[in-house]
Length: 350
Ligand code: COI
Image (cartoon, rainbow, N blue to C red; front, side, top):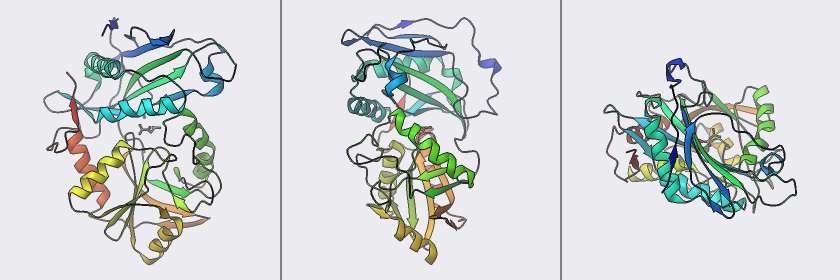
């Protein structure tokens, strides 16, 4: 594959305070991009990270034809850089693209671009338990035309941001009983930009009451708990872990599916099934709801300390030996090359 590379004259890295990073605000020296024109993806390039300009009529601004992915790279003590199940993200961005009537991005370009970009910006992947490089591949519609139909031009890009924790403090959630994130037959399963935009207003309202996230429920009756938008959600009732099945409303999260596999492998009982609001509220009242946590690439495993349902708030117990802490260690040890990779999930950048 031909790949044009233009390197930065001088790295910006010495200006960065890696001990004080806000999620997704600082970007590395280079970016990968590839344009789709005349029915095919053109020669990809890597060039210094910089603003890009578009005509105001570019379709992405008007119709939100945009999809993205989230991945992370980790550095081990030997200075090797690792990705976690990048094959899953490569397949998923094309599933999302198909639903938004966008062309698939070739697998070979995806991996070569990612690998070369990470080799160039390797210094930006910091060692240490809390550090990683968040990788954001995305595709946007770039045709200059405001007719409401699919674009015939697109841009695929990968940008990278050194990060630490996604949520700074405790995470408390509200169970949705009015707004919805996704509906049957819609785009909820896709990482479509608009899914996130639609969640911001209800999330801001929740924030006013001290809740950081909304746990979305089924759009018809708000009876079943689905996902939290930036993460899938797990519930521990006594010693059983529960999570909702994926569907065309729920993102097929890489962290989610890895947790299910790891926990089943350890003999922990995992039930993937519809979870009703009423059973969780009842379990909380009986003291049987021991934990709730979110799982996602950006958020990793984020323990949820409390929730609100129809104005009533519930606190979760603080456990010494939580499943969340255990699972987080299992998964991050695999990601960081600190534990055996029994399922072949790690991918070395070389
Ligand atoms: C990710 O975990 O990569 C996500 O997509 C969440 C993001 C919107 C910050």
